[in-house]
Amino acid sequence: MVSVERIKQFTKIPSEASWRIVNCLPSSDCPYHGDIEIKNLKVRYRSNTPLVLKGISLRINGGEKIGVVGRTGSGKSTLM
Image (cartoon, rainbow, N blue to C red):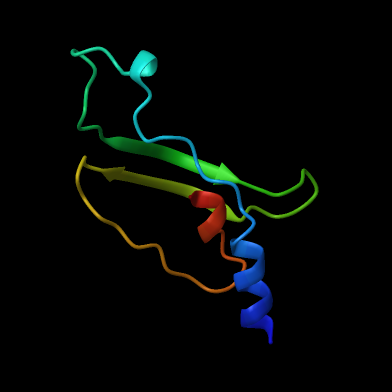
């Protein structure tokens, strides 16, 4: 029954904006292949709680696909 309720909810979600908006295109010199670099990232949910992410450093080259794994509550969603 839950799946039927979900289908009903999804049919009422408004459409997303168009992928390309004519007046909002990036300039021709805009980079289309970027890298992500994170250095010593530390995150906690509140000031009085322990760190969830403890000094994470990583580099993701443009075009690479990565996977993030970990236990429940280990900060995977926070990292994303």
